[in-house]
Length: 423
Image 1 (cartoon, one colour):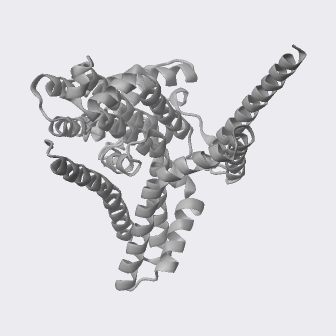
Image 2: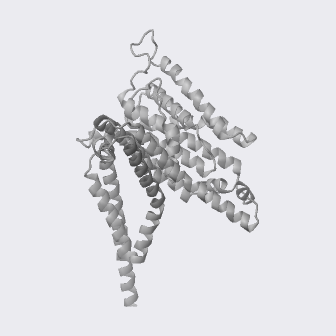
Image 3: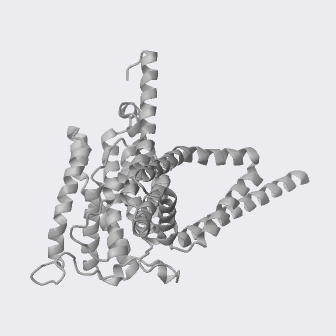
């Protein structure tokens, strides 16, 4: 009897120790991410320590095999993107050599500029891309192509600016209400495309793209109504500045060395990515959306409402893209500019595909895209290598990643034909 009690006590103590180490590793990872995204490279030490402690915890409590299995699991997800990135970098070097540029000098400037010198620019670039990438990825999970995320971005930006002007509330309450109402309005922008998809089968690529152009041309009208009147304003292409009560907190307020433009919108974007991942992997709604995306007919046979889940996916995707526009207005610009030429909706397609539509992966591909843009500017300025090289590298990288899907589809096609089944 005493032995049973002792064994139970030991197991309980080990369980408590495991939970404590898990908590410490999560806190280290969170703190490291905050400081690293805030431009403090000391955050890398905390990130490395958190990852090492996480692996040690698995090794100590579950053994060597479980640790190797966990490492292999994560590496298997990275191998295709890493091969694509490496091949794109090599292709870029060949193009530089053929056109008379030094690839070593150019790449040194590119990576130093993107990941060190102008890291804050990479983070600023990545913040809206995470939201639009999540929007595209979430729709893809339901078998939908939300190509109109750019329009939903504009709706979010206009809604964020309008609510920022109108709400005279304490800062935190104002920001929460702006995000809630603004993302809801952006989701409504996808209502008609979703309705047409469900009721008539109209392809969402066409309808969402049309609505994106409508939103784009609504923005100058909005700007004229809120400060951009040429008859009364010296700045006819920009709205008034939003009141400070609706501004997102800047990193400089708690990291003194942070760039003054860096804001905590990146943390909201990262939190959104983990929330989307949780919804897709751990909820009934997420399961049904993925089932519809994988095979609509099979989902329908199992009693899953295809129309309902298409609606949910389209509306949720619109809300995520709208949050990108809200974050830009509240965090970076504090006003809305005419001829914004954001491009975040279109680039969101690239980062979602590069991440294989994995919500957490979208964080890293967005940061990579942002770093390449920031580094490309630094490279062009310091080595005079054309920034277009970066666009070529990004295009090759994306092509090689998307080629994976072509290979999978071709292999499935061949297998079905050999088996005599229908495609």
